[in-house]
Length: 115
Ligand SMILES: N=c1c2ncn([C@@H]3O[C@H](COP(=O)(O)OP(=O)(O)OP(=O)(O)O)[C@@H](O)[C@H]3O)c2ncn1[C@@H]1O[C@H](COP(=O)(O)O)[C@@H](O)[C@H]1O
Image 1 (cartoon, rainbow, N blue to C red):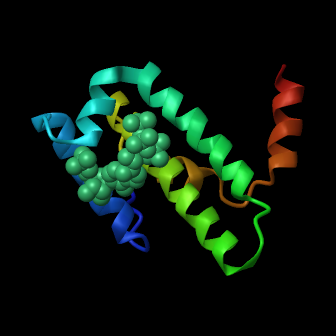
Image 2 (image 1 turned 180 degrees about the horizontal axis):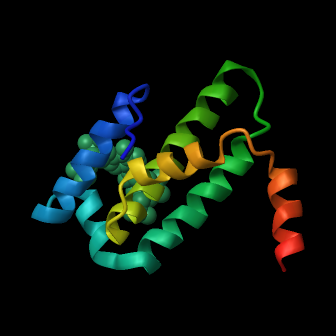
């Protein structure tokens, strides 16, 4: 499985989340989410996605920093859902690698001819 070597923070976060899933320490926000299952985590993902979209057109350095902050929130919660489902970020990286070089437009056209 490939690992996002250029993004060591993502790899470390994945390991922390997997450890949380194994240990379920009570004083952990991740544990709270994992215990709530896909519904709880999915609700947070929806909320964080909305917040990211809202931040997308905020101007200036502060707006940019807020947008980055919201993107990190969304990525964290998405990674918690991956963890809940037993999927490693490396598997997502593999899928992105498989797609490398194929335009979304080309992929869509191929899908349509198969249907
Ligand atoms: N990267 C994150 C991270 N990003 C965001 N969050 C939390 O996600 C929540 C974002 O939701 P909101 O802004 O809606 O805050 P809230 O209203 O308090 O949230 P809710 O009570 O409504 O769920 C906040 O509580 C943030 O602190 C995170 N919590 C944890 N991590 C990482 O996960 C690791 C393990 O965390 P614990 O499992 O809590 O120890 C940490 O060391 C960090 O590396």
